[in-house]
Length: 268
Image 1 (cartoon, rainbow, N blue to C red):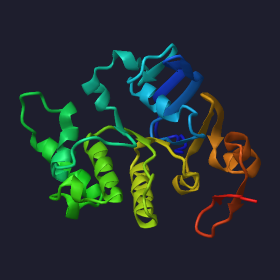
Image 2: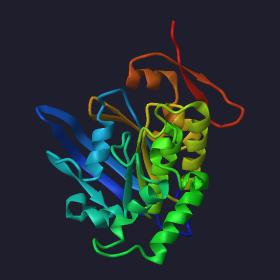
Image 3: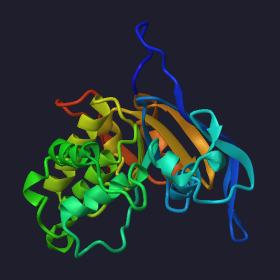
Image 4: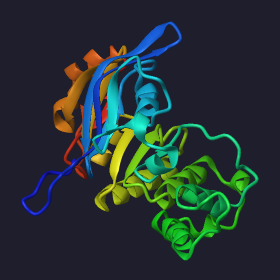
């Protein structure tokens, strides 16, 4: 999590205030409060059904709220047009439909929709943003292949490259490391860390608790649609706290390569 310095002013990118959300007859979120400043990295964790993905979708204005509000740059998300909001926040969902027969460069180019009019052609700035994203995400060798020829890890890097090309200062990612083999997971974590170091704001939903020490961010935990923790990673990573959130036993493994320990299930 980026700390304020005397040389710059930290502004609030996302603010959630007393947010309730219902899906059908079930209330999924209960009075959620959350504030994310520019350049913050926040890891959102919790058991299945805790409301993590619902919270991401509510922040994007994709779900009706029952009460409370979501503010982007101090303006209600309901008052943003979709194109204007896309210039502030890019969403990388857990699952993607379509695009499998499309060339990677074209998939990434589609992310520039917030800047190109319906009848307009991509500008030099749009084309350059696409090429810069390809380089930043290190997928130059994939750029002319179709998406259906890529592995899951390679596809995930393409979707993140599309989010980068979108030019939004904030990225919302839903389970970005799911179903990746160890090599692709390591490459993806390195990419996400590079993007945070470049100053992007990130809200990442993850079931992989080792993403917490790898990303060195702030942790927010949900349980039964309620926020149960919001604070520093080192305060979250202890067996008692983990047991309270996930209702199972954990053990921590010190690592010589990072300040925070790794997390393992303790199965007896």
